[in-house]
Amino acid sequence: MKLSSQIKPISYLKAHAAEIIRQLAEQREPLIITQNGEAKVVIQDVQSYEQAQETLALLKILALGNRQIEEGRIQETTTVFKNLRAIRER
Image (tube, rainbow, N blue to C red; front, side, top):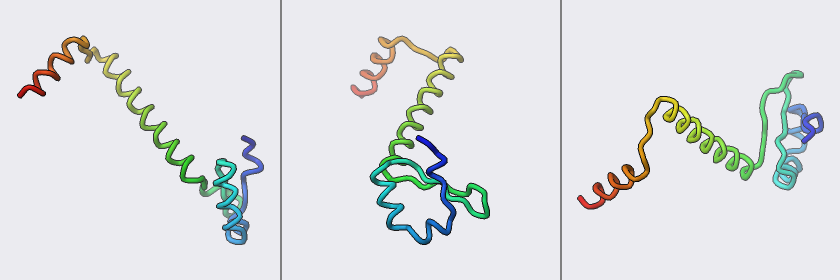
């Protein structure tokens, strides 16, 4: 993805909103909007946003798991399943 082609001023967004929305849905590449020459916002299609959020959630789960391993907070799988069965039988 070449970001330089995906940078537009806010005036372009105002004048071409419908076209931008169509392109975002088709190309699935984010668009950077500038105001007074500075990057202010990133616009992306909903599918890309949802995918990014799912990826972020998975990365957070992995980081939490790694932290628990580093802290020694682990259990044997047999112990975990035994505890789960005991809970279910209550």
